[in-house]
Length: 249
Ligand SMILES: [Zn+2]
Image (cartoon, rainbow, N blue to C red; front, side, top):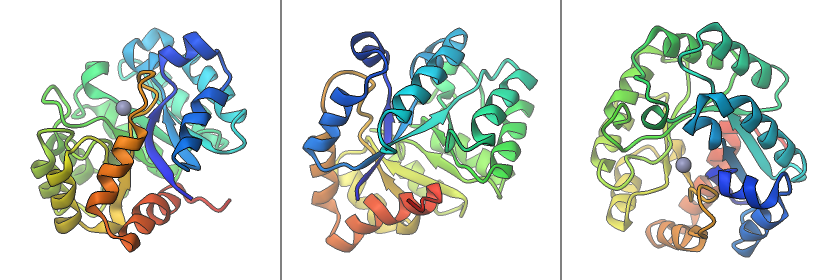
């Protein structure tokens, strides 16, 4: 099994394929990727689209034979309404986690709302995946502070610092046991350094596929495999995501 832990059901796919995941899954098949965490897109861009985006996401994942694993988001300005949206999807296990993109969603992670979200999501036994690696609201250290305030919440750096901030991601990973990181963005030297200096039991791999129609999966997978030996590949592509998701299928 291979889990891609950072993909989207992007607006371009909604527009082209409606709620049919077959073309999306065909790209996964090309690289033997069996499962994917699928994050929202339209709802991250515009809070008014969250409910529709979640319905699309749920429908498309339900049609994927269990291969696409939905994560949902919430409107950070909606207080109790945002928390209710999270409860609605995590309560019955239809979604397996929550995603926030503080830069796109225009939110600081240092708010009472985010504190509530962290405790609520932890109570559901689910992780929160954050976009990270861009200075507006989304540096690894900012998200690391949130992880520090909520030690029982599992928080994932969705990009391990992206292109520029993987050194900062390494530092915060080594300071917080409840912080995980998805290798989705750093170039080869960054991936090597992360593998050498972080706890490998808290690392994931992802491609960001689905944000656009462009297929970066092969490139991202080759990049990772160049830096990782076989046992590390097994751990990061399968064992760790199964543990994160409490996957027993
Ligand atoms: Zn993404």
